[in-house]
Image (cartoon, rainbow, N blue to C red):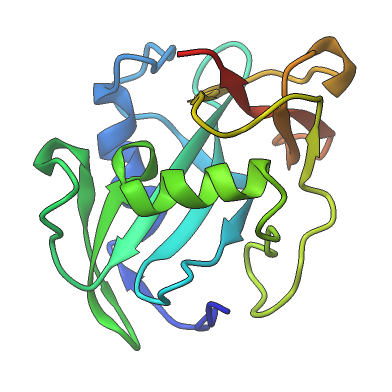
Length: 192
């Protein structure tokens, strides 16, 4: 199980995402510098214990209506050979662990493997900010296999009911800046 350290990161994850997010093709905002707030998420454990895995929801409140983005991230102690260099979100100095290389988890094979394991019911989602604490609010719905199929991550989140999806999908929640809770589909199994 991953250990959550109560320490500093310089720059913070939100500071890194503020510069990285507007450069992504799926960014729907019009601000060059979004105003991001952490709005939810969960963690998964790496069976090898080497890679930190976090699915963070951030909300950009710069537009007329706030927009929720899902950013899966991996935290590593060195630049890996099996993750594309363009997947790097940035580096940060962790107060306990030292330099962390933070990657877009959609392009990290450890993250995608664990997301697949979650959709197959082989791993348990963990609380975002607590060590060794399962998160029962993260749920898998639908029927069908999760092996040999592509997983699509919803980068821009919209509140929707799980029953609107027929294929296997992952549902979790976040909180809007006004305090309203929302739930939506974070990822879905799609045919290749």
